[in-house]
Length: 405
Image 1: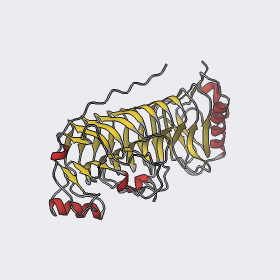
Image 2 (image 1 turned 45 degrees about the horizontal axis):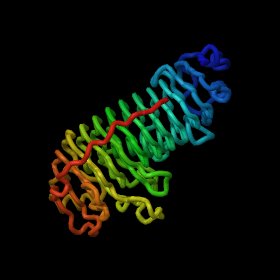
Image 3 (image 1 turned 60 degrees about the horizontal axis):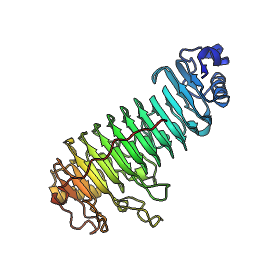
Image 4 (image 1 turned 120 degrees about the vertical axis):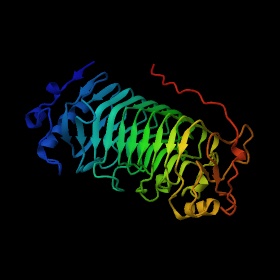
């Protein structure tokens, strides 16, 4: 294993900015910043399996993406508030850091203001993201990059002790992957705080999602490599996710109403338990089908299942929320069911159920203040407050085991 430390690799960077804070202004990158980018880029290009590439404390500016395609590499800074890779004014490349490799670890640094996604890793096995902050420092804007932390088409993913702020799609996103843990992390001021999409076997726990448009999303979308299944969302704090949606028009998250706590869309076998979910103005929990998104009329494969099935909500701490829903249709539904001064109960359900389901109940809600059924199949003409059809239980899902052998 080679450990490439500051004194070994910085070269021109040491002469130009040292291992402390850069004196370069926070505007467009300078020639000094280009030297810094070239130094790190060279180490990534020349990396050998087993290398540990250490980046010193400081704020370093880059004008184009960093890339890595070598397996078994660790890229390590000195802390998410000490080692900052800034892509403000980025001229080339969509991502801040793009990796296509197995056995990759990214830890203890920040990626700021990338033109597109902050950190993307695809087609990987055994990836660890630890102590990483991705942030767009200018606040929530549609022009911000879509994804903060973005593993896609991966297996055995661990994200922990990380922070995502300001993504115009999802702060912490895992898509089309298998065997995933997202824990002890924080997502705020994103459109979607944490999103698990078309992923099989994921545990999302001990996270904080606050100040986003939607707190935690578990989505299935059509025309992707696999459909999601078996997701546990537990021991999280999903509080006051009421930020106005700033997602780009036409993207799936653009349909998420502000004030959404935990949202499940078209996914099967989801267990939501032991969370603190509060003060999300549209609803603390939303359960919906593909038919309630802007994608319902788009081409889908015949085997895509649009219905949420096997959804078990139980033993959560739920309070507030539902009193000021986003969008006219939700406001009208709330008034129709609960009056001008009323509030949606803990669960808002679009009403679509799979008529062909043959094994076990489809949706089970225990310990909730009620269920608002919007009656989507009936054209939203006969919404209901009847929670009795959902008074049931489902088997607990198994713990996700990240096999790292």
